[in-house]
Image (cartoon, rainbow, N blue to C red; front, side, top):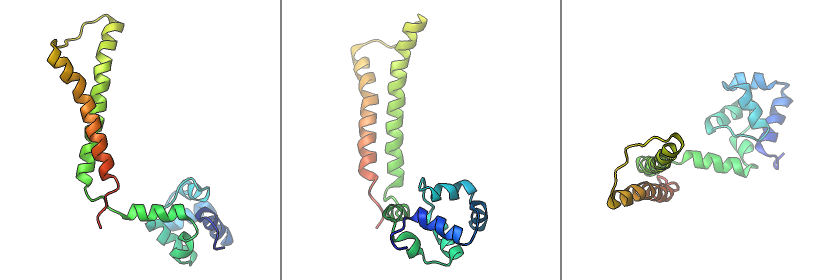
Length: 155
C-alpha cells in the first residue's frame, strides 16, 4: 500500500467502504466531479480537503500524501505565499497591457486595409518609434518582472 499514488489510494479507500463517488463527495462537501477528477489523477484536492479525507477514512495525512510526489509538491507550493504579490500582479498586468496595445496596433492598420477606412493615426517619425517600442517594452519589462518574482516566497 505504501507505493500507491494518491488517486489509487483514494479510490481504494472509498471502495473499501462501499461508497459511491457521490456519497464521498457529500461527506467532504465537494462535487462528485471533483472526486472523479481526483480518482482519475486529473486533479488534486487542496490541503483542506486532504485533511477532511484523512478524517473520513481514518488514515493519516502522511498515508495519503507520502507516496505521491506530485501531490506533495502541490501541497508545498500551495502553502507558500508569494513575497511580493502586488508587484507580481503589477508586472503581469503590465505584460498583458503591452500585449493588448500590440494587438490594437496591428488591428487598426489591418482594419483600415480591409474596410478601406482611414483611422486617425498620428504622423511623425518620433511618434512611430515610441508607438512601436512602448508595447514591446511593456511586455519585456512585465515578463521579466513577473518571472523574477514568481518563485520568491515568504520565509
